[in-house]
Length: 573
Image 1 (cartoon, rainbow, N blue to C red):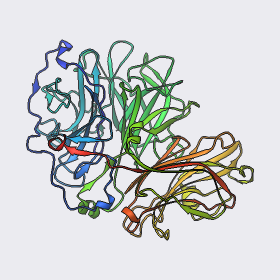
Image 2: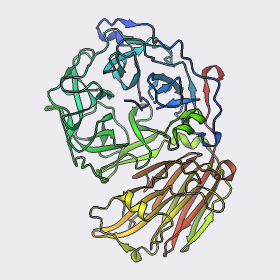
Image 3: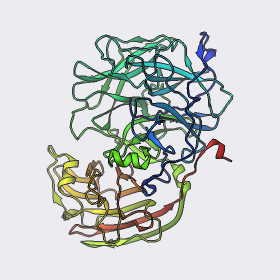
Image 4: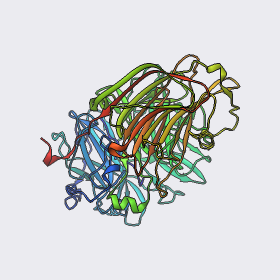
C-alpha cells in the first residue's frame, strides 16, 4: 500500500537451498538513489529525538538477522510528500532504538514495479532462507505481488537485494480492480504443509483478505474464498494475521497453530488500524472472529489516535511479538514541504493478548528505557479539585512519564449509559476544560507556563449499568496557537475495574508526538501536535485535576529522554 514501513524478522539461511532453481535479477536499481547526507532547512523544534525518522523526505517502514534488526520503509527520494516513485529504504539497528541508515534496498526498475515499490512482508522458509513479498506498481499502474531476496547472506547488514526473475508471482484475480490488490502479509505454514498468505483487497462492496496458497512458495494459487470478508469496512490495506498465546505474554511464531493460541486479524482502513480476535480453522481456510467488525467506534483498534499501516513481527531473540505503526503528520502540506520531511514510526511496542481474552495489550519495548536520563519521582500526593502543579526537573519536550492514580471517592462518581456512546465524541463534548465529578484528571503535556498551549491526556470515571466505566481522552483543542493544524480529540474506553486496580498512564513525549498508554497498555492514543510556543526548553509538563472530587497520585516517575543515535553507515563507528 502507499503508506507502510515494512516489518521483517528472523531471516536466515538461503533461498536457493529450497531445491528450486531461482534466476534472480542482480540489480536492485538503487545505485542512483543513495541516502541523503545533507538535510534540508527544517523546523527542528518538531523533529523527534527518539522516534525513527529518515534524514529527510517522506517516510512510511524490522527483521532480525545475525544479531541485527532491519527496518525497510517506503521512501520518496524526491520530496517530503508521498510521490509517484516510492522506493524501499533500509536502516539497521542492534536494539530497535538507535539506527544506521544504509543504501536503499529496492527501487523501481522492472515492468512489474516500474512505478513504485510499495509495502510487503518477509517470511522464513524453515532451514532455507528469507523471502520478501512486496507490492509493485507495474507499467499499467496495476498492483502486482513480487518477490526479492538477499544477495549475500553472509552480510549481517544485508545491503544488497535481488529481485526474482519470474516476477510478478501474483496478479489481481478476476473481478478485483488493479488498484485494490496490495500488501502481502508474512506467510504461514499450514497443517497440510502448504504456505498461505493474504492480500488486502476490496471487491463486491466488501473489504477482504484474499487467500493464496503454495507448495513451493513460488507458484501461488488463489483459494476459492477469502480468509475473511465484510461489508462493514472499506478497502483493506496492510492486513496482518498472526497467533497470540492465550496464557502468556510471550510471542509465538506466525505458523504456530494449536489449542494454546488465538488468531488476530488486523486491517487498515478509514485512517485507523482495526483488529479482531478469533479462531483460525485451517481445514476449511476460514477465520471465525469472536466479534465481527461493526463499522462503529466500538470496534477494536490498536491505537485510537494517529497510527496506521502497522505491522507485527515475531522477535525470536526475545520471544515476543512487536508492533510498529506509521504516524503521519497533522500539519499542512506546505509545512511538510517547508520542514523537508514527513511521517515517522511509533516506538516499537510489545503486544500480547490480555488475560480477559477480549483484547490486545501494548507496551513500549524495554529497550526504550536505555534512553532514560534525569529522573524525578514522588509518592502519595493528593490532587484536590480544580488543582494543577508542574512536574519540574526534566526536559518536558522530550520525556517518558508514568503516573498511577488512586480514586478514594470512587462511589461518588456520575452515571453514564454506555448504549450507543462513541468514546471519541464523548471526549470531544467533554474536553479537559469541562468539569465532571471524577475527572478530568491526568497530564498536560507540551504546555506553556500560562497553559495557553497544552495537550491534555486524561481520564473520566463513570458509573455504568454493569459497573464502573473508565474513559481515556486526548484533547488537542489547545495544542497549538496555529490554525492550520489538526486538533482532533481522541478517546477510548478502557476495560478495567477501578475498584480493583488503580488507573495508570504512561506517555512518551517527543517534541511533536505523544504516545500514551492507559490502563497498563489496554488503550493507546497517539497524537501529533505542533505548538507554536511550547517548544524545546519552553515546554512544560503538568498534573491536573479538573473534577469536583479529589484523586491521589499513588506514584509518579518521569525521565528526561536522551537522543537516539541515527546515523549513516559511513558516520557509524
